[in-house]
Image (cartoon, rainbow, N blue to C red; front, side, top):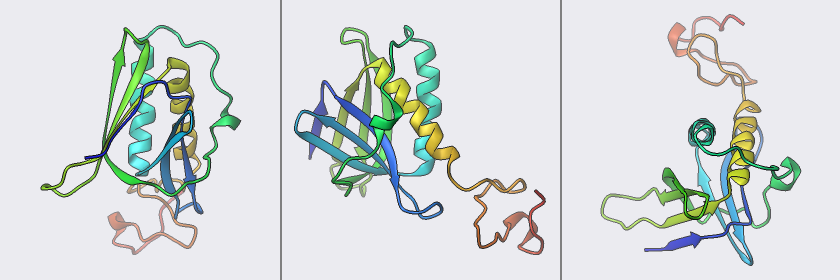
Length: 166
């Protein structure tokens, strides 16, 4: 089992590679010379933004946030593994939000795990970045909520017989 601990993450971000509709979402963390890039789904990014926002309301207000320009992905962007589950907790002793990511694996395999200790400021900037990335994607169909493709959309709620009303 691979176990990665970033107890003083210098940088935590999410980003995408690829065109809208074909994007791959990545979570990236760096501490000193160590960097870890992990793949996750858009729904996980959206849930992470929402949950971090709720969690941050319960904590003392963060200070100055990192600039969004500093949160772009860094090379290499090849993911080491795919995230299955993400957990979040607050370590009051370290005054850090701890992100725990576990690899998506088959039942009989041991998953890789990453524990990322990030400041409230880093996590607030991460939540904003997550929300921006999700909103920058394809708009949702007003009927079925699935993403609208630029080439057209066969809405399952209309059995593909009529375009969605916008």
